[in-house]
Length: 104
Image 1 (cartoon, rainbow, N blue to C red):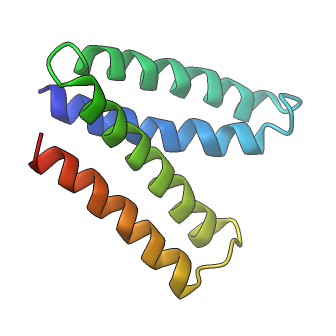
Image 2: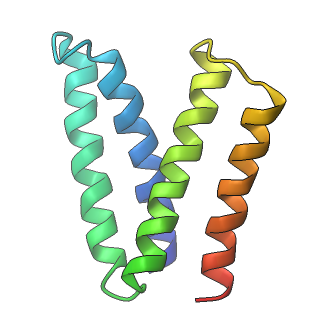
């Protein structure tokens, strides 16, 4: 259960990062509220998961999901470049996260 919560929390990190960008410095109410709610859910889920997942592994999985998810949304929906070197780097992040989970 903790791993499922950790994964959802990582996805919530992607949501709050995109919402933060879209909030335009907290001047737009809907993205600002989305940021606050998703941030709270993300942190609460991380806190719950870390009760049974080792902190180093849990934090890296959470950050990795959030970072890769945010980069992919940026490429797919926000016009950021999706170059081969960038995609390879994202795959390396995923490989590192998976490695830490497998070898924890």
